[in-house]
Image (cartoon, rainbow, N blue to C red; front, side, top):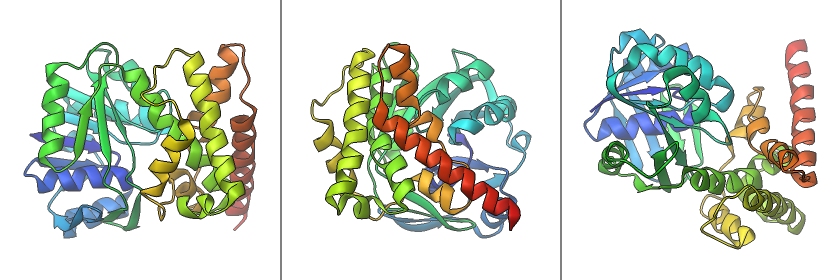
Length: 312
């Protein structure tokens, strides 16, 4: 299959590398010139829980170079989805499937607003703990689940076909008929670790190693679970604390992408992760004080970080 990955940060690089290693024609598309140049000249190296390999991947900063693709994976951060979707227009043909994979709430809907409701499907990926080691080199700590579905309604043959491509590349994949549930189940894990790890500047395992860190993490998750239930989400679990602790125990050395962004002096995705919970709560006439406080602390840290970066 001819596949374009738009946004080859840490997770996008893992997708691109493993899908290419399985024999697909893969195009890596990103605005990070140094990373793209390294992939084009030396190949894309992906190491970690899935092994260690360097594969040939076509790489460009201009999506038009790739031409029409059968599968387009938008793997940017949520705040970059609209720009990525506009750049991806040249990749989309009559039979193209677009798979939008982001943390938090709203990414696939944003992509659909640009590319069309009938084109975009949803991916939710968790438990990888991916990071960029160097330009052209990505690492992932876990090797967990890829969830796929339509934006509304049951899984379709095209979703099943895409799932088969990912399985052939070694990913563990499940398809879902209820996209809202799969998004929220990932969100519960995201809020447990993204905000707390960023505030404390610690790995998942380090946060969970103290009673206070573990309480903060599980309280964020429990509040998100409560708001999700009130919003009509039918979770597959009834103990959010146990759910997020089991998730975190598999990738103790991982740093959530929000923390990695902070460490690199970049703005993170707080507004669509922990910040999404009080927003949804407000729409339901409820409150979410724990996630609201965590979000405010992360925004304050980011503001201070950006001021310091501008002055350096």
